[in-house]
Length: 164
Image: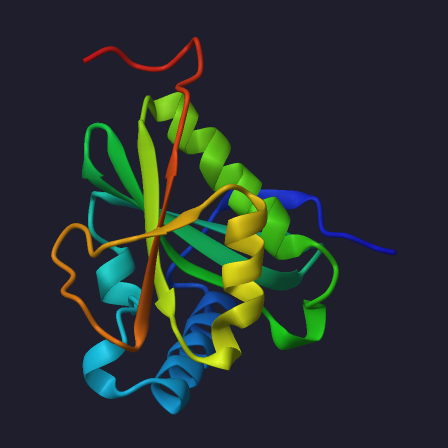
């Protein structure tokens, strides 16, 4: 089994990133009503409170993930995507582990996410639950929505985390 090992800060101007994000948004709008799609486009990922990473090997880009700072102790997982051709290789888990390690390093006490309630999102919800995420109520600017599942994970900050 070949796995990509290169996780790095993503270039939002890279055409491969734009294609991956376009595929992600297309799937979100094909699966959920427009008012229930909370995926970020390039402009939403370009704001200072969002850090964006990609995973790939060589010239191939296989996935992406973002971490949005909601406040100094709370991060939100955003835009996690594995390219359809690269699924089943553990890349989503690698991206999630990267975000969780970075969240702990930053001193976040909690990481939350919003995902869909439809069957399409079941693999994602299963992955998040495997890592200890539990369903919760809406957080941040979200509202209760039957098309959304909100999940959160309490973290123990790393010893080298920033101080408040």
